[in-house]
Length: 136
Image (cartoon, rainbow, N blue to C red):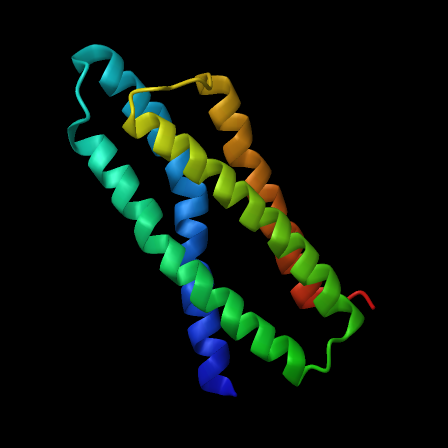
């Protein structure tokens, strides 16, 4: 079980990197696209980071569900999964923005993307609190 926990934590760390970095990268990509009118290396990096972390998210979810079953679906596990589902929705929303950006469509403002980025930080803090404190 320790190896499953290690794999879970490692994949969560990678997925969270993308959740935190991609909205910020979209800001810089948007500015670069406005200046050059081209896809450019920032766009390539953003797409690759998002795509790579999708696999990590799947592994993190699979190992997390396995661990939830090991912990007999304690009430705090249900809360954690609910918060993770919200982070996953945030991640999918980010993916939609990346897809639009690949077409040269940047609808969101820099301010929106900054706030969107910070919301994910609050979500991760909530997940960590639930895992550490196990409130019920």
